Image (cartoon, rainbow, N blue to C red; front, side, top):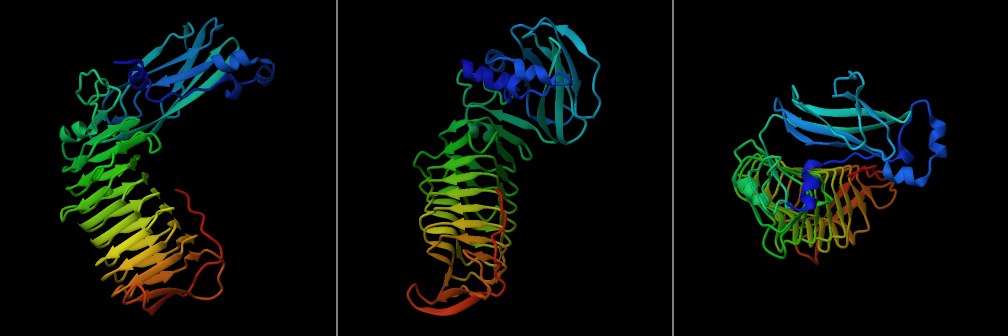
Length: 399
């Protein structure tokens, strides 16, 4: 494997504290007197997997890079609040390696303190522990072997999916993956982070096509699909959770079509898509805590024969429609959303009636009900719904 791959797997997460920002214990004056050379060269590093399976031993290592260190001592806290005695002495660059298995699911924080040359440094690493099998994917593993393990991950995401079983987690390291994915199993597909773990459809079809129920997708940037970033065109896709992703430059960010029941779309950012989110023939969806920004046709919703969905705590800031309801879109509930800079914040046509709007922010403070225009055709307004209680200040919605 190349050098980049070696770094990503031996050091998937690096917590570095330069001397400039290191917490010292009882020697605060020393920070003011140190020079830039020390600030650039002194690093405390923890390495190891950040996603682990409960009860399975994972290996971690720590070392201090200090060119003029005489000896280094370490103390650890493995997430239980108890600190070890000082361990050492070690030389600079010399690694302390240990294995640990986590007793239960949850989020744990490994903390360490290093001392050398009468100075103290600290660092931490957050570990998420789950009770499912983990399959690893890394595009940097170009030479193999490809086993889906932490040491030998698959190079392609689809390989991880194909070799998974129901209930597994497919964990994808940062990189750009030019793939069209088909998910036909009950899995959790998780990226390392949504800014740098990229699924690129490269101008083809759907980036991700889901055929199976009980799928979760999180922490990806999904882009350049001529149809949808994620497509759920199936009557077997109940209980889908899509959260904390970025969708951009797709025809549709997400396109659930006949996706049945209990779809959750939360904490995503949709920008520069033709349609941010297109919901068709689905019900009991919860769409919340999302941002819809600068999508060129319908900034947020296009509902066709969809009913009984809830839309709340979202932000729309688009070019045309904040919400566009079409067909038999009834009994949907829109509340506590922010609407900004849309040509028309909300609009409905044909039989999209009996929807409820409540306590939304409509671009400016309002002391009177806000009208939502409807029509039997694009040019013949004939219906009006109201948000009877619009709010005077936008909601603080973070995504």
